[in-house]
Amino acid sequence: MLTFLLVSAIAGSPLLGCFLGLFLACLKGWQMLILLEVIPAVIYGTLLLYFLPDWSKDVKWLSPDEKRALTEQYEK
Image (cartoon, rainbow, N blue to C red; front, side):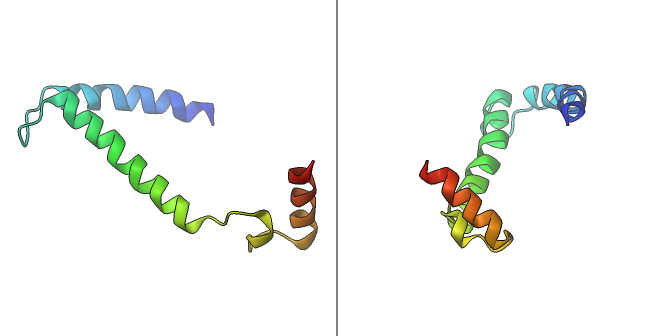
């Protein structure tokens, strides 16, 4: 799991460095980087709000025992 952090830093740094030199759509490189990082996060966060259930009792992939155990821990 922690290996992915290193791989993303090794592969992402040169790629992001290339983006810093670009000037597209009246945006400077650093402005494009912000948009490239923020737009997917906002979309993903919005989708999670609508598609994830609010309570463990509403989750379909848990067994009844797991649902009960989670509900008991929440109530403590």
